[in-house]
Amino acid sequence: MLKVERLTKTYATAAGPLTVLKDVTLEVTAGDTLAVVGPSGSGKTTLLGLCAGLDEPTAGVVTLNATNLGRLTEDGRALLRNECVGFVFQNFQLIPTLTALENVLVPLELRTEAPHGPGDGPAEACALLERVGLSDRLGHYPMQLSGGEQQRVSLARAFVNRPKILFCDEPTGNLDDETARAMMDLVFGLNRERGTTLVLVTHNLELARRCSRIIRLRGGAVVDDLA
Image (tube, rainbow, N blue to C red; front, side, top):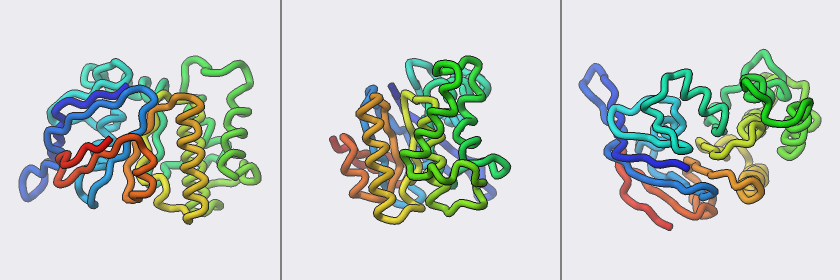
């Protein structure tokens, strides 16, 4: 489902080139669960963004769903993401002028062809918001929601297009312990129900241990790869 070969990312800074990811190679099979851990600044979020085609590497190859991302235009990568990728951002990335329900529906509205039967989109969105405990918040705007509620809307949005692979950046970072456990039960439950491949970045080692594999980054390089 995902193959990363000798991936490197370097940024130009006033002090000179800054390499945040160094020669990373990994492979994730369909339906697998992978946690990426490591200290702040180790390159975790950068790796996630490159794998999802949100950024371009300085060197190396990312193959997602049998497609070489380096051969696609920016529009082509966006289309591939909409077809098979879900992404839960650390800072939510909700559209402030849309309600919770409307935010969840955005990925479906951007599709050229509906992934479900006619009229199923709103029903799927409502069902997911109910599963994350927000059935009474459908008409609320992001500013009317707590950080934890916004995170749950983000999670529902990530699953609404039934992605083949889900990328999560610190998915429990804004949730209390009880809600975090419930949300992760949902994520791993959907992983089992739908065969969704899961790649998550986390500082939570308890959460990481729920994955079948853990990769540890330090200084932009893989230092451990544990199954």
